[in-house]
Image (cartoon, rainbow, N blue to C red):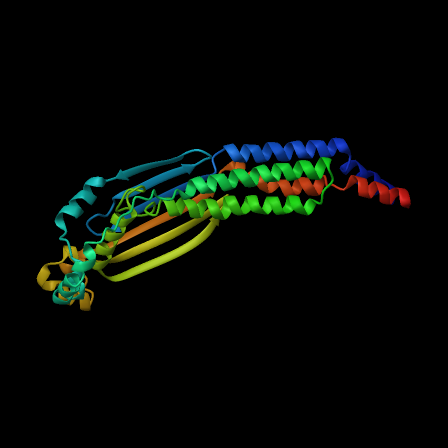
Amino acid sequence: MREGALSRLGSLRRHPAVAFARASLVVLIALNAAVSVWLIAEFEGQYTEGPPSSARFYVLAGVDDQYTMIDVSIENSTRLLVYQLIRDDVAPEEDEGGDDAGDDAGGDDGSSDTPSTTNEEPINRLDRARTWIQVTVGLLIVLEVLVTFVGISGWFRTAGFLAVLVAFLVVLPLAFIGDNPNFADPGSTPNSAPEEAGQAEDDDQGAFVHEETDFGIGLRYGGFEVSMMYAGYDLGLVEEDNRSSVRETPPEPGTKDAASYVKFDSTLSLRFGPSVVLLLVLPVLWLLAPSGRKRDAALDESE
């Protein structure tokens, strides 16, 4: 009797009405994910020590099927402005030796005449990711219909689902970071030119000595979070006569040069939209209402 009840339950799970309901849910969930918010990125950073301390950055970005929206806010920006005004610029040549750097710069005169820019339009990785997501979601819907009403193997549907996951979980975040390389850089706006931001970053790194870094990553609901810490002594806050000694050894606590210590703590979180997370329900639907009704019915008749 137990075997008979299990057989009737299995037949019910493969009933055409149940299969139609399952296919309808799969299509609705996939379409909802295709037109909703896909990725939400948040960056929060604060200077915790040094002259710019208490200055705080907050950047929020949202990506959907058409637009990328970014909002930037700065708290206690006056402290940051004063910090930029009181510090001196430290040229990278100063760290590597002025004469050598000057000779190297002079040797590049011939190549400096060569145009470094081209007329090619920049690659929009997010647009490519959007196209990839739309194609994979459309393919998943087509495969679900074919599995339900034509009877092709469910493995094709599984492959389509994995392609959708790769598009959302891998291609989309990498495309966002590729198009917004300065998103987590408080020294520049998220959409600033990478070349200019890279040059400014090199200058800043050349001005800091005895650097400390810390990095951690953890999971959160619907995504992950990265915590970062950067600290060091800013030579731009040190008198020029004392910079050589500060480069060699960290200044003693309580001294004037010790006030050049700057620390910045930040967190970067990437989480996916609720509609994208809801895609994980699809395998559950396929387990609760599997395909293959015709094959199982033929087996029952043969028994």
